[in-house]
Amino acid sequence: MARRADVSSKGSLILQAGQDLRGSRMAQNGLRKRCQENGKSNGVAHSWSNKESFEQAPMYVAVLTYLGFGIVTLFGYFRDFLRAVGLEKCHLAQERDEQKDFVPLYQDFENFYTRNLYMRVRDNWNRPICSLPGPEFDLMERVSDDYNWTFRLTGRTIHNVINMGSYNYLGFAENNTNFLKPVADATKEYGVGVCSTRQEMGNLDIHEELEELVASFLGAEAAMTFGMGFATNSMNIPALVGKGCLILSDELNHTSLILGARLSGATIRVFKHNNMQSLEKLLKEAVTGGQPRTHRPWRKILILVEGIYSMEGSIVHLPEIVALKKKYKAYLYLDEAHSIGAVGATGRGVTQLYSLDPSDVDVLMGTFTKSFGAAGGYIAGKKELVDYLRAHSHSTVYATAMSPPVARQIIRAMKCIMGLDGTTMGIERVRQLAENTRYFRRRLQELGFIIYGSQDSPVVPLLLFMPGKVGAFSRAMLQRKIGVVVVGFPATPITEARARFCVSSAHTRDMLDKVLCALDEIGDYLGLKFSRRKFTLRPDLYDEAHFDLDS
Image (cartoon, rainbow, N blue to C red; front, side):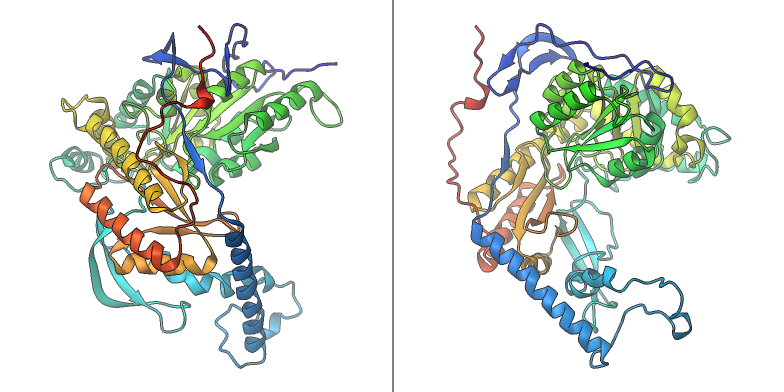
């Protein structure tokens, strides 16, 4: 017998259940998008299309990548043998002789990857920066005398390194004294620390002002803020779902979402990235089959997705997910850490990008660490939801309240984006980011690189594939005074090591051209131009995946 999730049981989210899909029209590529003005549907077809690129590398690249990992693994075992017989100095943590008979605190094999693979390229991470992380920064030079086991500073500073790795999407991580005067005034008035939780002595008027502004900015009934973005996910998801609930999580979700889901005690099932068929299959099974063994209806079904996926640069297929969550009476949790402020005509994130009503998303989550140049996070939605979290969230009950200068910085940046400061600077930054993003992505494709993600995503992964090229690429870029972030296994699939560029509105065209020129040179030298697509400057005349079959 068919079963559906019981969304009205005790302890459920205090949210309004979605409506059914009667009357919704279908297009060739799935559920049709509808355009909305100021968050309200007006029945006009949406004009923005989510064009994404996930080009596969030639087969020989995958073979050489696996071969490279195989070679360094063999050398790792050989070096472990040399350390065991005393022919190579051992820098590893080891058990003391008097503790040999106890349960080991240090598992030698578990650290094989760290000591034999990561150590070879460790110099490409944790580089000490000694300036503002704006579009350019200063770097303290360091060297290693023992193959990256330890480092020492040379005392030399590398100036004006182009910053292509920070999440400073709108350039609000700045040191303009005129812009930062409100932040300085807040520091003088409140100090830098609250030393209490919001529920005790740490609830300041500046926090109330910030939450009202966030709710207005997002078009939500209410919002609440937290001092740490990671904890916004990991500590609030357990307050929303628990035993007897089901979480459907995108396979590429951030670690904070994964941790929050695991801490909740709910059953977790993973669907393929942005794959609506995979998600709907899990929803059907959950509604018709219920819980394992007992087959009772799930207390709640919660879908976890991100706005922009930080390793892939892809944008969530939000209209289709909203349609599915309404059809199967599930709840939707949207993490807009990378998308809020960075996409949408006025920086309102993916709901604005798709012209959706923010109320279609049950839980709106985001962080202030990226587009707003600050720290912390928020959750917004129905007032009942926010009131519930104020009483039950561990981040509210136990965590220290947000630092007042940080809150003032967020207010300053958000008012600038909204135009409440009397200028158009905020909207100009949003538009400049969109222009820089499309220009940088288009030029990388012209140069022959494989890049992932949506054309409007400021997160731009450039595929390097082979482990040996990860370190070489980062070092070569730094020699040209360009700072980049490189990522490899286990943070990515073993065959998809990459460099992750983060475009900012603060980047000038000259900066981007300098980076592109260096990439062109290094791409030829290291053999990184794997793309087999023929890129043309002529725009697409039509998108055959979005034919409108209705009259």
